[in-house]
Image (cartoon, rainbow, N blue to C red):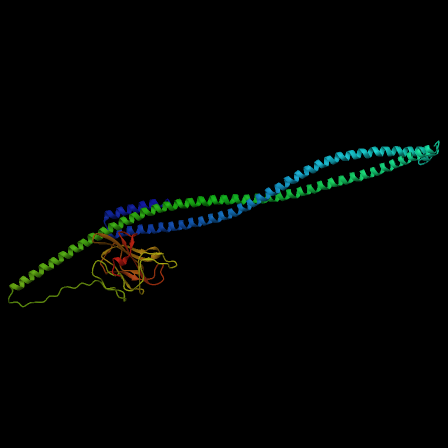
Amino acid sequence: MKQSKPLIATVAATMLLSFGLGAGNTSASVLDDLKNEQKQLEQKKADLNRDINETKSEIQAKSAEMDKLLAQIKTLHEKIDETQGKIRSLEEEINLTKSEIEALQASIKELEQKIAERDALLRDRVRAMQVTGGSTSYLDVLLGANNFSDFIDRVSAVNTLREADREIIREQKADKEQLEEQKKMVEQKLAEQEQNKKKLEEQKAQLDAQKKELDGLVTKLEEEQNRLQKEQANKEAEYEETHEVSEEVTQKIVAEQNRLAEIARKAEEERKRKAAAEAEARRQEAAAATTASTKSSGKSGQSSSAPTHSSGSNTSSAPKPSVSSGAWTRPAAGRISSTYGYRPIGWASSNHAGVDIANGVGTPIVSAADGVVSFVGQFGTYGNVVMVTHSINGTIYTTLYAHMSGFNVSKGQHVNKGQQVGRIGVTGRTSGPHLHFELHIGSYGNPVNPMRYVPI
């Protein structure tokens, strides 16, 4: 982009040189160079604008992708929070179970103490029975009664002792079963809770891993977004610079066209002055001839024929349009296929800046008015183009003739109204052979409806 301004400086220097030399063809060449540079700048602006739009679309696509990822992350956050809540609840249950275990362990210790004491008592009873001969001691107790009442008392005492022994054994057995059941229940409950906690922790670890992966993707997307935004900013800055330079070139083109318009105006004044002088000379010649004829009574009248001038041969077999009186004339013969203004058709511009005149390839195209040719050559989608700058009643106009198959004029050439400047063709972007004719007030860039000025 930076080389554009040195190029403008070079072009400007060339313009100054050409102005100093005053050569018409050189000036037209300068204008041609400026228009070519303008075309290059406009093409660069179009390319940059396309790149900017593509970058914007890519940024929007990345934003949509990021929104989806952020939505997934939000869902994962909710799942993680839910799982974390379940883990906390389970940890509270585990802590409660551990408290229950501690209480049970205290109860178990009491049971174990009671069991131990009973074991000691039972061992003492068994040891005593072994020493005294087991059940025989009970018989000795009964037989040692002094009387029947004493015997009954002894029988009751023996039964009480035997029942006490059996009760001790039942309690011992029940306590041991309760102890084993409590241990088993607590251990099973704790194992289940620990297993559930492990599953929840594994689930949370998976969710954390997914979140980490999505965080990584979001980071990459953010980096890509930043890169694209910087790229877009750089392209927009380059577009602005290109637009600024393009405006400078456009101003130089306008200035050059105005200069050529001034040349056309002066040429028109000179033509009118010469025509008036020639008319005055012919009038004086006619008056002198009348005076001489009157003085020469012996001579018979002689007839003279005025010289005829050819306006130039038509190299095309197709007819030229008839030249209208007044300042303007129709630029080509044929059917008007499209008028000025809006037209909703596919690839064509929505705002048609001129009038289309359809006819066969090779049909002559003539200058719509007297003027100076300011451009001849390729002009983007218009194909082969001729521009003519006119000065009519103190107002500057520029006419444009597009899609030509060939040229009949050169840059800087003075042309008369009705003089052939080219032929209808199909160059550029067109659906068929026709002349695209535009009329601009001042230099190129201010189109108006040609049918308001030109008798089309």
